[in-house]
Image 1: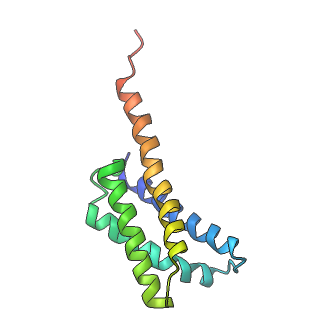
Image 2 (image 1 turned 45 degrees about the horizontal axis):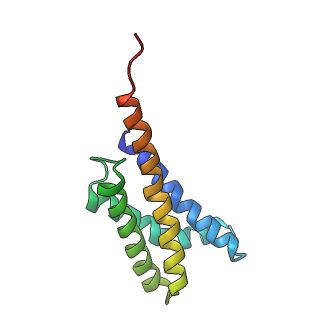
Length: 124
């Protein structure tokens, strides 16, 4: 898998996290409000991609996924705390679980699919 599709999937996971979170709290989905919630985690995701050099092995669950997830959560929480004030422990837990499942989970599935394609016997 090339890096652009992987970056799109990662971005979709982060956007979905923000939209579900805002919906669960009955918050508005106006673009400016969504962007205000999204930017710390989008910046964290970008940093995660840079630090892990995710474009080299975009589907690797451990080498790339684990690092991208950890940096996205840590940087996203730090930026959110600096820009909006405090962050609740429960929010950190929910964000960590959701983003971990999404950012690592799709890579596990993709890696399994890709490995089956390369190890499947060819028809004769």
